Structure formats: structure tokens, C-alpha cells
Length: 188
Image (cartoon, rainbow, N blue to C red; front, side, top):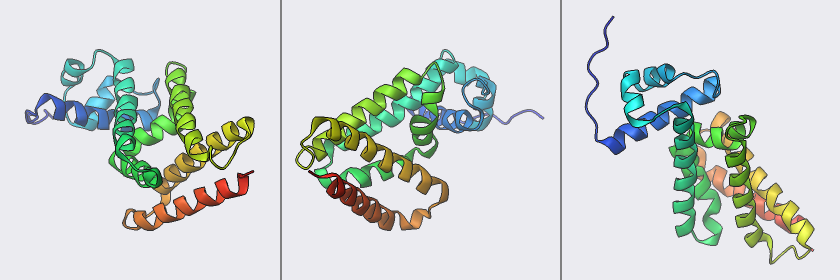
């Protein structure tokens, strides 16, 4: 059965649509198990349209990771110190498949392992600035920053999997309280 014509979208809107469809496809099939045809099907477009925007599957996967990290960078730059958890949850809700892909899956894909590791290092360094006033020992601070990042991201991924979006505000408050309790327990 032939496809009905795909409505013409502005370039940026089409790329966002394709990135979202790709995130879902890669999350389901992994990098090796996902074809550009599968992405096209998810987006409701032809494979030709996908190739007009992305040269290859690797470029498309990177675009998914970049979309999430760019939104995080932009929103965290404007956030005050206590607003990290709400920003993370908002970005995760905006790009749930991309967020999961970045945090859970990219590090297991050899082609993207370095990007995933770099994301974690940047996130750990960012968290280190928050825990520094409470944890003075450099080794413990590095560990606690990495543990705090894992707590936040793993918790958010689990909430995306099982949580009720109408209760996001309650979840954010519990996530923040848990982060404060962890830092308090680790303080020297």
C-alpha cells in the first residue's frame, strides 16, 4: 500500500522529528539493529527524506546524543543551583528516548562509547562543584560526584520507565531530598 504524501515541514522541524524517531528506533534495536528504513518508518517518511537530513546512521545517532546534551547544556546554564533535578527531569520528559539512549545505551555502543564517557565526565565535573563545599577530600569528592550523577540519571530513567508524568513535581522533590541526604551522609 503506497504511503500518503508526507507534509512538508521546515528543515529544523523535520530534523527534530527524525531525531525523535531515531532515538526511539535506536533504543529498541540498538545501533547495529536499526536501519535508516526503520527510522523512516517511525517518522512516517521515506528513507530518502532521512538521507536528505543525515548522511548516515552514525551521524543520526550522534544527532540524537547531541540533541539531548545541547538541551541539557542550555537549560543548566540558566538554572540556579537548586534547580538541577527539575531541569534533568524536564529534558528527560522532552526527549525520553534520547535521554535513555545517552545515559544507558551509548556507552555500550563501541562507536559512541567515547561520547558517553565524555558526557559522564562533564556531568561528574559539574556535580563536583556542588559537592565541593561539603566534601573536601579530592578522592571522595570525585567518587561522590560520580555517584550523585548516577543516582540522578538512573533515578530519572527509572521514573521515565515506571513513573506517572502527572507526579513529576513530587518525584523531583523526592529526588532532590535524596540527593541532599546523600551529600549530607558523605560530608566530611
